Each structure stands twice: as C-alpha cells, then as structure tokens.
Length: 421
RNA sequence: CGGAGUGUGGUGUAACGGCUAACAUCCCUGGUUUGGGACCAGGUGACUCCGGGUUCGAAUCCCGGCACUCCGACCA
Image 1 (cartoon, rainbow, N blue to C red):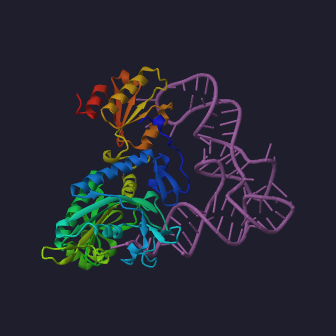
Image 2: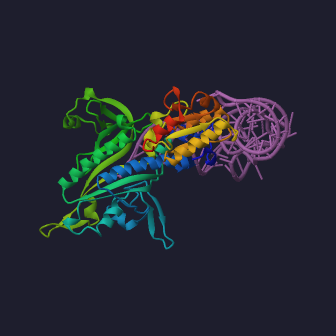
Image 3: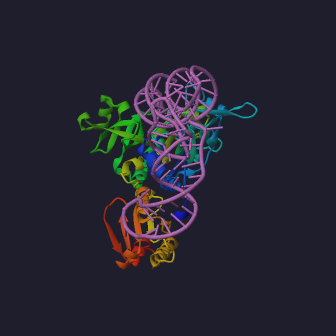
C-alpha cells in the first residue's frame, strides 16, 4: 500500500483526554478513531492488525475442529428469559431496545443462549455430537465505566467458541484441547512469554475456570504467578485450598498486574437444560448436552500488545500481527530522481511477490518520514536513497533495534520472497 | 453508580471580570531546502460544550445540564 493513498495521518499531539498508552499511540498513528467513550472505530492500519490477530485465532480454532458461523447481535428477550439472564438485576450491562410494535430486544452481551437454542434444532442423536462452533461477533456491554483505551469498551469483537458434547468426559477432554489451542494462539501472537494460564472461579459445574492473563501494567486484574510452572492464580480465588489443589507454595508466587485476554469455561448442562438442547443416546434415552464456552478478545489483545512492546518513539508490532512486514521509504521527493525510481521498482517487485509493504511515497522530509515510521511500528524499515544506492543498495533497520545495515536489492528480495527464483 | 478533575479554531495550549480571544501545530499559496518531525513570506479556520444567572462588561464568577479522563464499585 502506498502511504500517500492512506486517508489517515499521524499526529504529534493527541487529544488531552486520552491518557492510556494504547489509545494515545493508536490514535496518534491513525490506527483507530474514537467515536465516543468506550467506542472505537478501526481504521485501515488498525483493521489490518485486528484481522491478523483474528486470522491466527481462526486457524487455531479450525485446528480443533471449530466450525465458523456468525450469529446475530439483535436478541429476543424470550431466549434470555429461559436462563434468567434478561433481567437488569441479574445482568446489568444490557443495551436494550425495541421493535416498532414494542417487542423488547437486546444487543448481544454474549451468545450462549442463542447458540444453544439454535443448536437444539440440529442436534437430535448421539451421532450428532460432539460439535464445536465459533464466531467473531460484536458484543455490546453497557459498561458503567469504559477505560484504558481499547482495553475495556462498550462494543467489541469477540471470538467465542462453544462446545457441545455427549458427556462430561467428552467435554473435559475438549476443554483441555481448547486450552492448548489458546496457548498456541498466544505464542503465535508474540505474547507467549508473558501470558499465563490462570486459575479463576469456576461457577456451578466445575471447581475452576481458566483465564488467560497477560502481564500488563494497565491491566485490571492481579494475579499470582508461579514462574516455574508457568501458571497463575487470580487474586480473587487465592486460598490455601487452591494452593493445595495446584501443589504450589505461596512463597513461590509473585503478584503481577495483568489483563484478561481470554477465558474458558465449562458450562455443564446449565444452558442445554434451560434451552432444551438434548439428544437421544444409544439406548433411546434423552440426554442433555454438555457445554463449554471459550472467549478471546482481539481488540484487547491488540491493546495488550501495544502496551507491552511500544517504546517512547511509538508502536512496535510483533511480526505476526504487524499491519505490514516492511516499511519502504524513499527519501527523494522528486519522482524523476533515480533513487525514487529505484524505490518504485523495489515496491513493485515486493508486492508482486506477495510481500506486505507500506511504501512511504509522500513528499515529506526525511526526518518526518523516520519519525512516522517509528510511530507506525512496522517491524522492518527499508530506506532507499541516493546515499544507500551509493553504498550498494538499501538500508534496513529493525524497528526494535538501533542498528541499521546496507544490503543489496537482490538480497532484500531474496530474504522477503524466498520461494521465488 | 459514588468521588475527583477537565471542557477555548482539526490538534495541543494561553488569556487579571475589561482592546478585534493569543501562540504553536495542522491545512492552503509562493519560494528555498532535502538522511531524524527544515526555513522564509502570506493565507483559511472559534457564537470559548449547552442552558440559565450575576455584572456597565463573562472564556473567566455562580447554578443546572451534557461530554470526556482518572480513582473506586461493578465486570458471562
């Protein structure tokens, strides 16, 4: 993509009423647009990051037999009455609205109810189970206080996977599989080292649920981390009993601030019972399905990545989620200049080879371009100028490093399109 | 939902109750410049969040809204 085509611009200053690091940098760099408190739009660069995160999650969900669907944001009251989660005294984050004829509707806060109801139409026999279904869908939550930029918002995309199994054993087995898939996701996102499988309260059907917590100064949770075992315990549930269950000593734990980027729950038969999701087993008996739900928040993940890796010059994206792999910069403003033409040529070759390149072809001073490049945080910067050509090619520099080096154009192309000639 | 703070051109800031609301940036014109947010000259852009009140006079003081940020509560 040519930077001159981008409608967004970087800015030196941000609105004074944004203080969180993630929102400040993402706004300055033009990745997001703030609509109002707790509601953000994703602009071209930001959307590319979100989509990278989503694609990684999608691949791992497909790897554990997830089938992708898309449920609706508009929800009927009756579906939620079945589990007694409609009433504001039970769930106080609903956005509610109504049809012209007065029928009450709500904007989905999550999707356990509608998906259970939907699946009940398709599941009849033990042969129909197990099944695993997931989606990336917008959730709406009427938070009394949005905070920390994109970390806690009133409207956000969530990946939610639901498992439908015949028995508790089958469900427990899949729960472990989902847990492993999540660990892979965070590893691929570049957050593996600072994300902990965290024990949290389980609810009615299991002793514990699990959260995935990423160490983050701006996070809302406090967790006790056991570095050796690579697990953590949410502060809310830390008791002697939990320590005993997990076979850890209190003195081996260190407290950290963290952000909950994902969670997995065993739901038992609570929803299948309320919404009548049952199947006929081998003996002709009616049985309730066992369920689990598994959430991940791509936007919060994006926020955590910003908070974790950004430096005083701007964003720093891990390769896996960066909006572009390379930031190609031409210093020459004159399009007739040889080095400008060279940059055009390199841009064409790289994009033809399928490399994701952002080409800064704007008529800006070198200093402005470098500052913008640092702010945007693309992992590798490639500068083409008279000087670099005189030295034998292009100058490359990793965003997270101070060192730069000159390599030949051939070498650059070889590195970034290893599968071509 | 409780507490605190803040609302001034697109953005960041300034202005004792008193001149035509100032400065920087952004944007536009022209010229110069060209490897770390360049320079010169000129220009556009604000009912000072909204509604009341006090006063000869309000961006400024008072009251009521609304919005945003922060702390707390809440958080399938």
